[in-house]
Image (cartoon, rainbow, N blue to C red):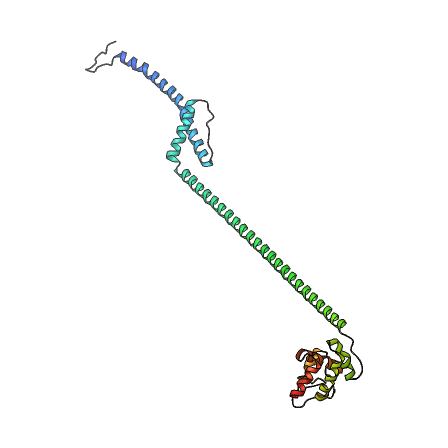
Length: 276
């Protein structure tokens, strides 16, 4: 229906007004439905962002339980957006925590390494002490064995010496008894001489000492029947060389045999030089 002009004013076209009035409520209804359909997505995005942030703060991975691809994408997008824009603080916290964990792990490793080194050093010290004790025991055993061997050798030597002395004593003829001349006559045969050698021995010791066991030469210090110089030489024949005639005679006959061969050889030297 056309507009009717009144007082110069134009009346609106009723078709345009009706068309506008009919479209307006429809548009409003469509906007509300669209809004109603978009609301769950916004809610899901907000909820997903909250869950993502909570999962990041707790150190876990949140999985959206919905089966809708749109919901999963919304959650993933919200998580990515929250991490990229609003999660700088939690990221820094996680980085610091990871660094702290790394430092703690290194500290634990260092502690374990020190403990292992200490145990190794203690083991080495124990082994060294054991080796030292073992060496000391071996040295002590060796020293004891050497000492025992030396003692055994000394005992064997002493036993051998005693046997030799006993054999010499057994082989030595019995000492004759009587006066010094009788003792001397009885000893001639043990030196391999005939009894006729006594005719030279008797004047020899008559001139030297008169057959006196205590005869002493004041000028030279010669002593006893054979006039040994010094008299202590006769100790090889016996400890009683100062008083026993048999001991002095035994020594004198041995001296004569070693130097002159026989009593007659000694007497010839005595007659020629005045001493023998």
